[in-house]
Amino acid sequence: MTISASFRKAAIAFSLLCVALAGAVQPAAAEEKKSFRLAWSIYTGYMPWLYADTSGIMDKWADKYGIEIEIVQFNDYIESLNQYTAGAFDAVTGTTMDALTIPAAGGVDSTALILGDYTNGNDAIFIKGADKTMKDLAGKQAYLVEYSVSHYMLWRALGLNGMSEDEITTANIADADFVAAFSTSGVDAVVAWNPATSRINQMSDVSSVFDSSELPGEIQDILIANSQTVKDNPAFAKAVTGAWYEIMALMQKDDEAGIEARTIMASGAGTDLADYDSQVATTYFYYDPAEAAAFYRSPQMDEIVDLVTTFSFGHGLLGNGAEDKGHVGVALPGGKVIGNSGNVKLRFDDTYMQMAADGAL
Image (cartoon, rainbow, N blue to C red; front, side, top):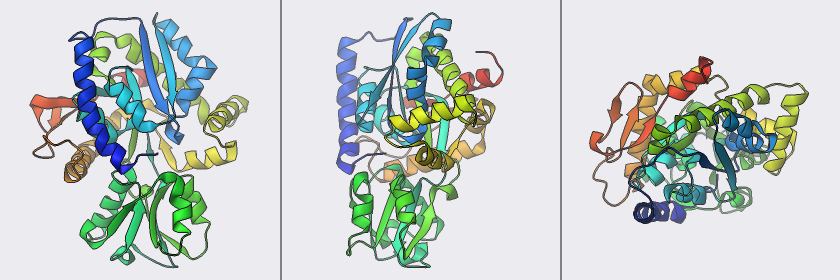
Protein backbone atom coordinates (compact mmCIF):
# COMPACT_ATOMS: atom_id res chain seq x y z
CA MET A 1 0.00 0.00 0.00
CA THR A 2 1.17 3.53 -0.73
CA ILE A 3 2.95 5.03 2.29
CA SER A 4 5.73 7.56 1.70
CA ALA A 5 8.47 8.08 4.26
CA SER A 6 7.69 11.76 4.77
CA PHE A 7 3.95 11.10 5.04
CA ARG A 8 4.42 8.41 7.66
CA LYS A 9 6.50 10.51 10.06
CA ALA A 10 4.38 13.59 9.37
CA ALA A 11 1.29 11.50 10.11
CA ILE A 12 2.46 10.92 13.68
CA ALA A 13 2.77 14.64 14.32
CA PHE A 14 -0.50 15.25 12.53
CA SER A 15 -2.19 12.59 14.67
CA LEU A 16 -1.25 14.48 17.82
CA LEU A 17 -2.84 17.61 16.37
CA CYS A 18 -5.90 15.59 15.34
CA VAL A 19 -6.33 14.34 18.90
CA ALA A 20 -6.07 17.84 20.32
CA LEU A 21 -8.57 19.26 17.84
CA ALA A 22 -10.96 16.34 18.24
CA GLY A 23 -10.88 16.76 22.00
CA ALA A 24 -11.84 20.40 21.60
CA VAL A 25 -15.00 19.67 19.66
CA GLN A 26 -16.11 16.28 20.97
CA PRO A 27 -17.33 15.14 24.38
CA ALA A 28 -14.74 13.50 26.64
CA ALA A 29 -16.42 10.11 26.30
CA ALA A 30 -18.40 8.54 23.51
CA GLU A 31 -22.00 7.53 24.01
CA GLU A 32 -24.59 5.24 22.50
CA LYS A 33 -25.43 6.32 18.99
CA LYS A 34 -27.15 5.03 15.87
CA SER A 35 -24.96 6.21 13.00
CA PHE A 36 -21.36 5.13 12.29
CA ARG A 37 -18.69 5.60 9.63
CA LEU A 38 -16.05 3.11 8.43
CA ALA A 39 -13.12 4.14 6.19
CA TRP A 40 -11.17 1.85 3.87
CA SER A 41 -8.64 2.16 1.04
CA ILE A 42 -7.84 0.03 -1.99
CA TYR A 43 -5.77 -3.06 -1.20
CA THR A 44 -6.32 -6.79 -1.73
CA GLY A 45 -7.30 -7.42 1.88
CA TYR A 46 -9.64 -4.45 2.15
CA MET A 47 -11.71 -4.97 -1.01
CA PRO A 48 -14.39 -6.99 0.83
CA TRP A 49 -15.52 -3.69 2.37
CA LEU A 50 -16.37 -2.46 -1.13
CA TYR A 51 -18.56 -5.51 -1.60
CA ALA A 52 -20.08 -5.05 1.85
CA ASP A 53 -21.18 -1.61 0.72
CA THR A 54 -22.36 -2.30 -2.84
CA SER A 55 -24.02 -5.66 -2.17
CA GLY A 56 -26.20 -4.45 0.69
CA ILE A 57 -24.64 -6.93 3.13
CA MET A 58 -23.49 -4.13 5.42
CA ASP A 59 -26.94 -2.55 5.37
CA LYS A 60 -28.51 -5.91 6.21
CA TRP A 61 -26.34 -6.35 9.30
CA ALA A 62 -26.74 -2.74 10.36
CA ASP A 63 -30.53 -3.08 10.08
CA LYS A 64 -30.39 -6.16 12.27
CA TYR A 65 -29.00 -4.03 15.10
CA GLY A 66 -31.07 -0.93 14.38
CA ILE A 67 -28.13 1.22 13.30
CA GLU A 68 -26.68 2.82 10.16
CA ILE A 69 -23.12 2.28 8.92
CA GLU A 70 -21.62 4.38 6.15
CA ILE A 71 -18.63 2.85 4.33
CA VAL A 72 -16.30 5.39 2.73
CA GLN A 73 -13.49 4.62 0.27
CA PHE A 74 -10.23 6.60 0.40
CA ASN A 75 -7.68 6.72 -2.40
CA ASP A 76 -5.01 7.75 0.12
CA TYR A 77 -4.33 5.10 2.76
CA ILE A 78 -2.55 7.43 5.20
CA GLU A 79 -5.31 10.01 4.89
CA SER A 80 -7.89 7.42 5.92
CA LEU A 81 -5.89 6.76 9.10
CA ASN A 82 -5.49 10.47 9.74
CA GLN A 83 -9.22 11.06 9.34
CA TYR A 84 -9.96 8.21 11.72
CA THR A 85 -7.46 9.65 14.20
CA ALA A 86 -9.18 13.03 13.92
CA GLY A 87 -12.49 11.45 14.92
CA ALA A 88 -14.19 11.68 11.53
CA PHE A 89 -14.63 7.89 11.40
CA ASP A 90 -15.47 5.20 13.93
CA ALA A 91 -13.36 2.51 12.24
CA VAL A 92 -10.66 2.17 9.60
CA THR A 93 -8.72 -0.55 7.79
CA GLY A 94 -4.96 -0.72 8.26
CA THR A 95 -1.96 -2.80 9.18
CA THR A 96 -1.07 -3.65 12.76
CA MET A 97 2.08 -1.53 12.49
CA ASP A 98 0.21 1.50 11.17
CA ALA A 99 -2.49 1.15 13.83
CA LEU A 100 0.31 1.38 16.39
CA THR A 101 2.34 4.17 14.82
CA ILE A 102 -0.44 6.54 13.71
CA PRO A 103 -3.67 6.54 15.79
CA ALA A 104 -2.29 4.73 18.84
CA ALA A 105 0.97 6.70 18.93
CA GLY A 106 -1.17 9.78 18.34
CA GLY A 107 -3.17 9.07 21.48
CA VAL A 108 -6.35 7.51 20.06
CA ASP A 109 -7.33 4.37 21.99
CA SER A 110 -8.20 1.83 19.30
CA THR A 111 -9.47 -1.74 19.27
CA ALA A 112 -8.55 -4.26 16.58
CA LEU A 113 -11.91 -5.96 16.06
CA ILE A 114 -11.12 -8.11 13.03
CA LEU A 115 -7.92 -9.85 11.97
CA GLY A 116 -8.56 -9.96 8.25
CA ASP A 117 -5.43 -11.38 6.67
CA TYR A 118 -1.67 -11.32 6.44
CA THR A 119 0.55 -10.88 3.40
CA ASN A 120 1.74 -14.31 2.31
CA GLY A 121 3.99 -13.45 -0.62
CA ASN A 122 2.60 -10.07 -1.68
CA ASP A 123 5.82 -8.37 -0.54
CA ALA A 124 9.25 -9.44 -1.82
CA ILE A 125 12.92 -8.42 -1.95
CA PHE A 126 14.50 -8.58 -5.41
CA ILE A 127 18.14 -8.41 -6.53
CA LYS A 128 19.29 -8.30 -10.13
CA GLY A 129 21.09 -11.42 -11.27
CA ALA A 130 20.41 -15.13 -11.08
CA ASP A 131 20.84 -17.28 -7.99
CA LYS A 132 21.28 -14.37 -5.58
CA THR A 133 20.65 -14.66 -1.82
CA MET A 134 20.01 -12.20 1.01
CA LYS A 135 23.78 -12.09 1.64
CA ASP A 136 24.19 -10.51 -1.81
CA LEU A 137 22.22 -7.50 -0.58
CA ALA A 138 25.20 -6.39 1.53
CA GLY A 139 26.70 -3.15 0.23
CA LYS A 140 23.75 -2.46 -2.06
CA GLN A 141 21.12 0.26 -1.99
CA ALA A 142 17.58 -1.08 -1.67
CA TYR A 143 14.78 1.01 -3.15
CA LEU A 144 11.54 0.80 -1.18
CA VAL A 145 8.74 2.73 0.48
CA GLU A 146 10.59 3.64 3.67
CA TYR A 147 8.91 2.95 7.04
CA SER A 148 6.22 0.84 5.36
CA VAL A 149 5.44 -2.76 6.24
CA SER A 150 7.78 -3.73 3.40
CA HIS A 151 10.54 -1.87 5.24
CA TYR A 152 9.61 -3.92 8.30
CA MET A 153 9.91 -7.08 6.18
CA LEU A 154 13.36 -6.00 4.98
CA TRP A 155 14.43 -5.41 8.58
CA ARG A 156 13.20 -8.86 9.57
CA ALA A 157 14.79 -10.53 6.54
CA LEU A 158 18.16 -8.99 7.37
CA GLY A 159 17.93 -10.13 10.98
CA LEU A 160 16.94 -13.65 10.06
CA ASN A 161 20.00 -13.85 7.80
CA GLY A 162 22.43 -12.57 10.39
CA MET A 163 22.60 -9.12 8.81
CA SER A 164 21.73 -5.57 9.88
CA GLU A 165 20.54 -2.38 8.23
CA ASP A 166 24.06 -1.00 8.65
CA GLU A 167 25.16 -3.31 5.84
CA ILE A 168 22.86 -1.68 3.28
CA THR A 169 21.46 1.71 2.36
CA THR A 170 17.87 2.50 1.46
CA ALA A 171 16.29 4.93 -0.95
CA ASN A 172 12.64 5.96 -0.77
CA ILE A 173 10.42 5.60 -3.83
CA ALA A 174 6.68 5.46 -4.44
CA ASP A 175 5.09 2.08 -5.00
CA ALA A 176 4.02 3.21 -8.47
CA ASP A 177 7.72 3.38 -9.39
CA PHE A 178 8.78 -0.12 -8.26
CA VAL A 179 8.94 -1.68 -11.72
CA ALA A 180 10.35 1.40 -13.48
CA ALA A 181 13.05 1.85 -10.84
CA PHE A 182 14.11 -1.79 -10.97
CA SER A 183 14.33 -1.54 -14.75
CA THR A 184 16.90 1.26 -14.42
CA SER A 185 20.54 0.29 -14.85
CA GLY A 186 21.67 1.91 -11.59
CA VAL A 187 19.15 0.09 -9.38
CA ASP A 188 20.23 -3.36 -8.18
CA ALA A 189 17.67 -4.09 -5.43
CA VAL A 190 14.06 -3.25 -4.69
CA VAL A 191 11.52 -4.19 -2.03
CA ALA A 192 8.09 -4.28 -3.65
CA TRP A 193 4.53 -5.48 -3.20
CA ASN A 194 1.82 -6.63 -5.56
CA PRO A 195 0.99 -6.00 -8.33
CA ALA A 196 4.64 -4.99 -8.90
CA THR A 197 5.87 -8.20 -7.26
CA SER A 198 4.24 -10.42 -9.88
CA ARG A 199 5.59 -8.25 -12.71
CA ILE A 200 9.16 -8.28 -11.39
CA ASN A 201 8.99 -12.05 -10.86
CA GLN A 202 8.40 -12.37 -14.60
CA MET A 203 11.58 -10.47 -15.49
CA SER A 204 14.66 -12.38 -16.62
CA ASP A 205 17.90 -12.53 -14.63
CA VAL A 206 16.24 -11.52 -11.34
CA SER A 207 16.31 -13.23 -7.93
CA SER A 208 13.58 -13.02 -5.32
CA VAL A 209 15.71 -13.45 -2.21
CA PHE A 210 12.95 -13.13 0.42
CA ASP A 211 9.20 -12.67 0.53
CA SER A 212 6.51 -12.21 3.14
CA SER A 213 5.48 -15.87 3.06
CA GLU A 214 8.60 -16.43 5.16
CA LEU A 215 7.02 -14.32 7.92
CA PRO A 216 3.67 -16.09 8.34
CA GLY A 217 1.16 -14.14 10.37
CA GLU A 218 3.35 -11.07 10.88
CA ILE A 219 2.27 -8.43 8.36
CA GLN A 220 -1.37 -8.20 9.32
CA ASP A 221 -4.35 -6.30 7.95
CA ILE A 222 -6.93 -5.46 10.59
CA LEU A 223 -10.05 -3.39 11.20
CA ILE A 224 -9.61 -1.01 14.11
CA ALA A 225 -12.34 0.98 15.81
CA ASN A 226 -12.41 3.65 18.50
CA SER A 227 -12.31 1.75 21.78
CA GLN A 228 -14.82 3.97 23.55
CA THR A 229 -17.21 3.67 20.62
CA VAL A 230 -16.95 -0.12 20.77
CA LYS A 231 -17.50 -0.13 24.53
CA ASP A 232 -20.59 2.07 24.30
CA ASN A 233 -21.91 0.55 21.06
CA PRO A 234 -21.35 -3.21 20.86
CA ALA A 235 -24.03 -3.33 18.16
CA PHE A 236 -21.61 -1.59 15.80
CA ALA A 237 -18.87 -4.14 16.48
CA LYS A 238 -21.33 -7.01 15.99
CA ALA A 239 -22.67 -5.62 12.72
CA VAL A 240 -19.29 -5.03 11.04
CA THR A 241 -18.00 -8.41 12.20
CA GLY A 242 -21.10 -10.19 10.99
CA ALA A 243 -20.91 -8.52 7.58
CA TRP A 244 -17.20 -9.31 7.22
CA TYR A 245 -17.57 -13.03 7.86
CA GLU A 246 -20.60 -13.33 5.60
CA ILE A 247 -18.39 -11.99 2.82
CA MET A 248 -15.49 -14.24 3.84
CA ALA A 249 -17.77 -17.25 3.42
CA LEU A 250 -18.85 -15.99 0.01
CA MET A 251 -15.56 -14.90 -1.55
CA GLN A 252 -13.81 -18.26 -1.14
CA LYS A 253 -16.44 -20.02 -3.22
CA ASP A 254 -16.07 -20.66 -6.93
CA ASP A 255 -19.78 -20.72 -7.64
CA GLU A 256 -21.59 -17.91 -9.47
CA ALA A 257 -22.08 -15.81 -6.33
CA GLY A 258 -18.45 -16.12 -5.22
CA ILE A 259 -17.10 -15.29 -8.65
CA GLU A 260 -19.42 -12.30 -8.92
CA ALA A 261 -18.29 -10.99 -5.51
CA ARG A 262 -14.58 -11.26 -6.38
CA THR A 263 -15.18 -9.75 -9.81
CA ILE A 264 -16.74 -6.70 -8.19
CA MET A 265 -13.79 -6.46 -5.78
CA ALA A 266 -11.37 -6.77 -8.69
CA SER A 267 -13.11 -4.05 -10.66
CA GLY A 268 -13.05 -1.75 -7.64
CA ALA A 269 -9.30 -2.34 -7.37
CA GLY A 270 -8.82 -1.44 -11.04
CA THR A 271 -8.01 -4.93 -12.23
CA ASP A 272 -9.65 -8.12 -13.50
CA LEU A 273 -10.73 -11.30 -11.74
CA ALA A 274 -7.68 -13.34 -12.73
CA ASP A 275 -5.28 -10.73 -11.37
CA TYR A 276 -7.28 -10.23 -8.19
CA ASP A 277 -7.43 -13.98 -7.61
CA SER A 278 -3.63 -14.10 -7.98
CA GLN A 279 -3.35 -11.40 -5.30
CA VAL A 280 -5.73 -13.34 -3.05
CA ALA A 281 -3.49 -16.38 -3.52
CA THR A 282 -0.57 -14.50 -1.90
CA THR A 283 -2.79 -13.10 0.86
CA TYR A 284 -3.71 -15.40 3.74
CA PHE A 285 -7.31 -14.53 4.57
CA TYR A 286 -8.64 -15.66 7.92
CA TYR A 287 -11.87 -17.02 6.47
CA ASP A 288 -12.58 -18.84 9.74
CA PRO A 289 -13.30 -16.43 12.62
CA ALA A 290 -12.32 -19.11 15.15
CA GLU A 291 -8.84 -19.25 13.63
CA ALA A 292 -8.49 -15.47 13.72
CA ALA A 293 -9.67 -15.25 17.32
CA ALA A 294 -7.29 -18.02 18.34
CA PHE A 295 -4.38 -16.23 16.70
CA TYR A 296 -5.01 -13.13 18.84
CA ARG A 297 -4.67 -15.43 21.88
CA SER A 298 -1.56 -17.22 20.64
CA PRO A 299 2.03 -16.72 21.84
CA GLN A 300 2.92 -15.74 18.28
CA MET A 301 0.76 -12.63 18.63
CA ASP A 302 2.82 -11.58 21.65
CA GLU A 303 5.98 -12.04 19.59
CA ILE A 304 4.60 -10.03 16.67
CA VAL A 305 3.66 -7.12 18.91
CA ASP A 306 7.16 -7.15 20.38
CA LEU A 307 8.75 -7.17 16.92
CA VAL A 308 6.53 -4.40 15.57
CA THR A 309 7.11 -2.16 18.59
CA THR A 310 10.87 -2.79 18.33
CA PHE A 311 10.95 -1.79 14.65
CA SER A 312 8.67 1.19 15.18
CA PHE A 313 10.68 2.62 18.07
CA GLY A 314 13.99 1.95 16.35
CA HIS A 315 12.86 3.90 13.31
CA GLY A 316 11.35 6.84 15.21
CA LEU A 317 7.73 5.96 14.45
CA LEU A 318 6.34 6.18 18.00
CA GLY A 319 6.76 9.95 18.22
CA ASN A 320 9.35 12.25 19.78
CA GLY A 321 8.13 11.56 23.33
CA ALA A 322 8.76 7.81 23.15
CA GLU A 323 11.60 6.78 25.45
CA ASP A 324 11.44 3.07 24.64
CA LYS A 325 9.55 0.54 22.54
CA GLY A 326 6.96 0.09 25.27
CA HIS A 327 5.84 3.72 25.12
CA VAL A 328 2.44 2.70 23.74
CA GLY A 329 0.81 -0.10 25.70
CA VAL A 330 -0.74 -2.91 23.66
CA ALA A 331 -3.44 -5.05 25.28
CA LEU A 332 -4.03 -8.66 24.26
CA PRO A 333 -6.87 -11.06 25.15
CA GLY A 334 -6.78 -12.33 28.71
CA GLY A 335 -5.67 -9.04 30.23
CA LYS A 336 -2.04 -9.18 29.10
CA VAL A 337 -0.40 -5.84 28.30
CA ILE A 338 2.83 -5.44 26.35
CA GLY A 339 4.48 -2.11 27.09
CA ASN A 340 3.17 0.72 29.25
CA SER A 341 0.03 -0.45 31.07
CA GLY A 342 -0.67 3.19 31.92
CA ASN A 343 -0.77 4.18 28.26
CA VAL A 344 -2.70 1.40 26.53
CA LYS A 345 -3.80 2.72 23.15
CA LEU A 346 -4.07 -0.42 21.03
CA ARG A 347 -6.20 -3.43 22.01
CA PHE A 348 -6.54 -6.76 20.22
CA ASP A 349 -10.00 -8.01 21.12
CA ASP A 350 -11.12 -11.50 20.14
CA THR A 351 -14.66 -11.04 21.50
CA TYR A 352 -16.56 -10.40 18.30
CA MET A 353 -14.63 -12.81 16.10
CA GLN A 354 -15.33 -15.51 18.69
CA MET A 355 -19.01 -14.56 18.64
CA ALA A 356 -18.97 -15.02 14.86
CA ALA A 357 -17.33 -18.43 15.32
CA ASP A 358 -19.95 -19.40 17.88
CA GLY A 359 -22.85 -18.23 15.70
CA ALA A 360 -23.76 -15.67 18.34
CA LEU A 361 -23.96 -12.52 16.20
